[in-house]
Amino acid sequence: MNTEGTRHTGFDDAIWQGREDTHEAHFSQRWHEAVQPMAEGARAGVALLGFACDAGVRRNLGRPGAAAGPQALRRMLANVALANASVLYDAGDIHCDGDALEAAQARYAGEIAKLIELGHLPIGLGGGHEIAFGSFIGLATALAKQGGEPPRIGILNFDAHFDLRSAERATSGTPFRQIAEHCALHGMPFEYAAYGISRFANTAALFERAKKLGVRWLLDEELGAPKLDAALASLRGFLAGVDHLYLTICLDVLPPELAPGVSAPSARGVALEVIEPLIDAALASGKLRIADIAELNPQLDIDQRSARVAARLVARIAAGAHP
Image (cartoon, rainbow, N blue to C red):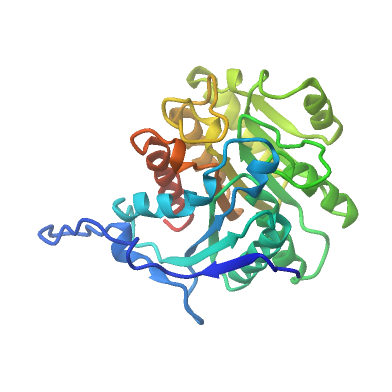
């Protein structure tokens, strides 16, 4: 594994600071009081791993700045109230130096595989959506070591974009095409569901590629609150056909007033009142093995709105995965 051009930094005490409700009689912890450095032999829990990279966004001609996303997300998470007594770890960040995207993805995938093998639920903190290729490869690597038939991994992507683009090099717009190619090469089924797709942010060629690859999708127009039951039925049907789940959330799936701090804000987006029940259904399947949040760009954020909603989603996943 060539990881030249990458660095792995660890736990930062200065980030995990916040309010302490010492006068409350009952459970009143916040994330900064519960998160621990990842250590050898640690019992299984939720493990945060940052992917401090926006090289793929730059290659995709997007607006850079997402490399600072992991630290901004941690700062917002620090003061979030814990919903339960989850076991939480911070495994640090994988940094992409310059344009060394492939090396960063390989190193991140290797760390993800280790965490899964040790029984943890990794939650990746992006970073551009190029994080997705590393997340999937990490999960596939860990599962392959268990032997048996090729794993049936379902990918659930909340996103305004398919991210199935053709390009000479990997970008933030290519990860799921790369995953499809990896699956074909290794005899694995490609099970991909994309919810929140914008008709006007994806070319006809991308819709045609999605059809050829057997992608399931729901448009942002099909994900209003009145249609939630139909969306849940669609999702449960998808989940029933897979053995393991990789959940990835690109913040540009949300309305622009909720998530302005992304490379390509949505014109419409999907409301949290729809996204969150779908996430809850995915968690309830018991099949989640890894999740990540992508495209948080603090440089473009307004009043930390994007970081705030990203922290809420991470906290929801952590609480639901380990109730």
